[in-house]
Length: 343
Image 1 (cartoon, rainbow, N blue to C red):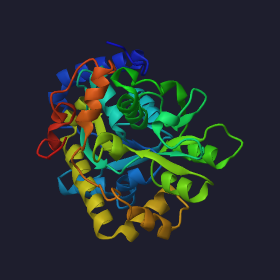
Image 2: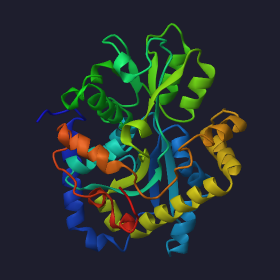
Image 3: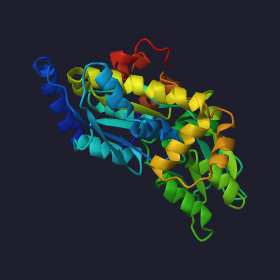
C-alpha cells in the first residue's frame, strides 16, 4: 500500500494523548461546560451558514434556550483548511468549519478522537483553467500548475486524485499531485487574473469559481466535483474533538440547531442570507451576481447530513492516507448526527 504524505504526525500524537486523557476524565467535567468558544472557517460562500450564525448569534441563542445562557463565540477566519487544522492542533480553536478531507485525516490520526457535528454545505467545486489548451484532466502536462487550498489533504486535492484515477487508471491516482500548488482561494483567483502568473488553473469554490469564469479572459470549466463523485459532496462541516463533544453536549446541540436555522434562512430568503454573508465576510461581489450564482445546479445543497463522504474515505484508505477504514459515515460523526440520512 502506498502512503500519501499528509501533516506531520507530531502535533497529532500530542493531541491524541490529550484527547485520550481528557475522555478518561470527562465525566467530572460535564457539569462545567465551556462558555467561551472559538470556531474557525475559511473564505467563500461555502461558509455562509457560519456567517449567518455569527451575525444572528445563533449558537448563543440556542445554547441559552437549552439552559446554558452566557455563551460567547469567537469566529476566526483562516486561509485554508490546513491552517484551521494547525490552529486546532495548537488548541487555538475548539470547533472547525472546513473540509471533509481534513475531518477524515484527523479522525484517523487521533483514532476517533476527532469527529463531525453536522455538515453545512455541499455545493460543487469546479476546476477552472484559463489555458486554451486544457479542456479535460488528460490535457494537463508536467509543467502545468493547479492551485488547491492545501496540498494532498484538502477536499479539492483529494477529488483531483479521484479524477486522475478515473482518467488514467487506479494506480495513477497521484499523477497530478506534482502539478498542485498551495494557494488560498482568494490568492488563486488573483493568480488566474494575472496573465504574468504561471498558475493558470484553480480547483475553485464559489464565489471564486463564478468570478473567475466571469472576469478572467478565457477561463472555463474543466470538470466539477459532482462529475467526479457522481453527486453532491459535503465540502464543509463542523467538527471537533470527541472530548469537547462529551464535555459540552449543550454546545454541540446548539451548533446543530444553529446550523439548521441558518440553512433554513438561505433556502427561504436567499437575498437576505447573502446580504448577511457579504456584511460579515467583506465579500464585495454584487448581490445580483451571487443570486445568479445560486441559481446554478447544485448551489442550494445546504444540508445537515454529510453527503458523499464515504467515497472520499474509501479513496483515502485505498491510497494509504487513512490507516483505518470507516465502516459507515457515523464512525467519524458524533452521535448528535446519527439520526440523519448521511453518506
